[in-house]
Image 1 (cartoon, rainbow, N blue to C red):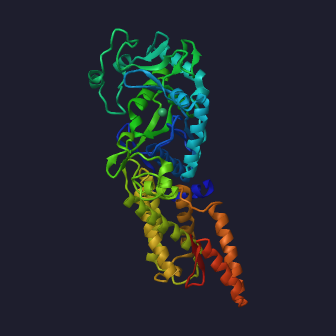
Image 2 (cartoon, rainbow, N blue to C red):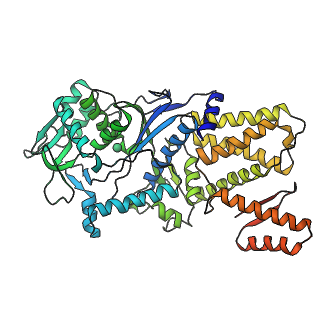
Length: 506
Ligand SMILES: [Zn+2]
């Protein structure tokens, strides 16, 4: 892929623009150290199956990663695994999600971590997302977390209290804009927070734990310079992103629900510890709804990705394949809400089929030089450029897909003979083939849903068609019919096209 990509980047007229949620503006993407790009995405907490909203986030940033690779950048993609069950709830208490799950399932905490890490990897691979370059864990970076806590304390923005260490938000806000990412105002945050009671360890209600002392009832805990405890949940991303990508790096992504307080805290921690803005471009993907209603467990409308595939939920008419779900999500820009409904998923199923059929038709077309029609030729080149321009326009997959469907219509017209393939220059036809295939497979990450990989399957089918054609030439109808009937029995439909080629579909 990179070899092709470098040629593309030279030809491309538009520049990549990203909506930076920090500036709330669409900005031209200028990496800090080109051709290198650092991309960090908040990963899962591994004590339950990821829900569809999580899946959407990971698919959205998979597209970002793939597009950066397509543009020829050398990307280091870091996505963490939160394997410490420390979540500070709204009352400021630490909830040990992993420990509680371990008790409920009668397993070791690390068994829970392994089980749901495996589950997460199954999910990301089922939906064909590329693996990150580094997948660091919170438990594997305990020393680095203590070092960052110490730097925050040394710089006057952290304080110890009863074996816990808190980030001093008020102190930070005296000289920094706490709330600049999420658009919150510190005064309103203070007004909206509960009053501290006399027992509280915090100086101010907004302060958050960067180290939390816990007793022996926590199965997972570590002996730090401040005593036994667990790291604060916001800390690990600051530590691991800057360790692998530098104190300031290019892109940080995550779901919109992480903007506050998690990402706001990440900025504060980095600035307090290292006096550096950690991220140049912040990106946030939007949420999901079902039939127009927010997805939530309490409403009973939150199905898991595995249930969506199996059709195993009362709101689903049937199951939808991972590639159809992937296609479905591509139809909406990452910054907009996606609404799940059976109608929309069924429409996506048809759209996906149409796109993949066009790809197969294109790859089966035989180019014969004819009278080149300059307008027709240019319109193919322009539409291919438009796909790239839309992707460069803040990863607009929805509009890029619409352009791909323009190309689908052309491809089908070439097949049906409504348009003469010879009206294109040979190099335009080659460009169409290369880019159309690359965009679908490498950028959109869509593949044919055939086990064993589509290349092997295509090769096998072509071999069968060759044998079938040879037997027909020899008038060996028994063999040619047998191949066709046996394939039909396997639910593989064989179609003889007017141009003499043979196509197949499942
Ligand atoms: Zn994070």
